[in-house]
Image 1 (cartoon, helix red, strand yellow):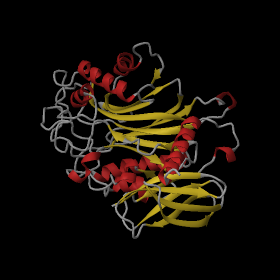
Image 2 (cartoon, rainbow, N blue to C red):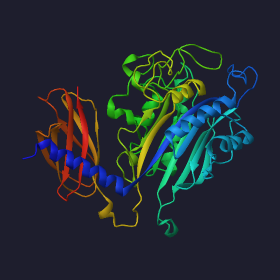
Image 3 (tube, one colour):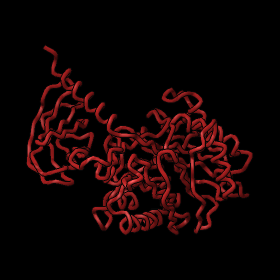
Length: 433
């Protein structure tokens, strides 16, 4: 007889194969380019001598080749159309590629640096670009649609990417919150049930900042909220200069200050990609791939250190590109996209679940989308395949929650297997601390 864990592993492999066959995956990358092409005298001490675009382009090409994003959003890009055109020509449409597209600059705020987006036009197109007049820089909203097999019949998937770069520094928390309020109000009015990502250099020092809480918890319409992918793995808290969050920091890549580049080593989490719950729970044919969110080059061992110092988590040329290209790390995530939009909804639906807090201690809450009302069973298994606990309950359709008791279980990793009486199932990793 085969051991129990063998059957569980087979089940997980089957789920993985099914998911891979049924879905395409988009890779999203957000990067603060550190005053790219902005050499205005006296501004942030960034000049052509210490931050020239030729060297930065070499670094960017190395990073793009390593990550291979489908959507690439940026902050701190010099606000000229000629620079934008050159960027695409020198870094994206190279080596035979001709499919990268962008949009014209909108700059109501008149800032020297702006946000922008670049995308693979083989997979998607830009329908609309709206810039919200915010201070000190516009907040840019890009409405993309995917080129799905049934696009000619009007069947597609929409993705909204919002790029924001609020004011930096301690003491500007209220200004950052005000900018996020404007963005949230716009989402509430135009995209309340759409797949939305909000990303950028938010300059937020902790999860207790009012701007972060507005995005994730306290907006007036509770249906409009964003989920932080790091909430799944304990990455939400007081990030600034806190070595407990070493694995999640994104700024700075250098341990020493050098005019344009901030120093001090990795000790802040300023760079984000947050997702609407429509993506977290796959309401609209898009789903966050759990575990895919990363700060490129952060191996969890560079607190207050330079990113290229004894870093084996990425190739050496990538570590050097991170060090020289900017004082921020790029952040990335993957989104699975259901490309079979022509089938009946009952064929496409399945349970989609997450657990928070995770890691947890005596209890946690399972958040899941229930395609139709019915009985859902929750089975918690050890990694050896031993059933540790089982609970069952009847749920209505839609977004649901279930409190899961973890009392009496030892610290470690477990697998939560959910089964619907209609045959749908989902497996989620649970960490007990």
